[in-house]
Length: 171
Image (tube, rainbow, N blue to C red; front, side, top):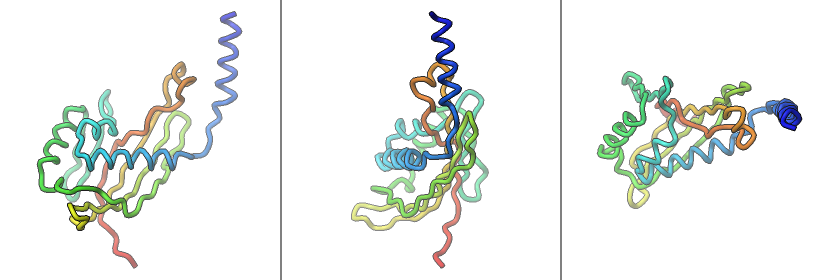
């Protein structure tokens, strides 16, 4: 009986594991918007849930002309967000997403990579413009292990790199 069940599962997995073209635009955009809500709430614990770090992997931040900042552990990211929360840069009420583009970078069988190019405005108490910025967020996700894959094929999208870029003037 177990031999037949195992055979069925293997055939089922092979038959239905054909990769489709990237179709996660909405999922990535919703995940990013959830992250922005955590930023607006200045909820450090929730913000760190959107990033990947650990097990030899890293998250990279590259802001302005500074050297890239490499994060290996959650506690490092917590410290960075605590410093950010106390800085004048965090004195805004909400973030308005002015322009958001999701673009796939790789759609390999075992992983998916995409970028979110976003221009956003930080708004104060009476919706006055405090600042406007543009950043590129790099997201990825991997498949769950083969047993978990039957329940949920992919892990959640995680941010692994953030790069600030100059805002291009409208032409």
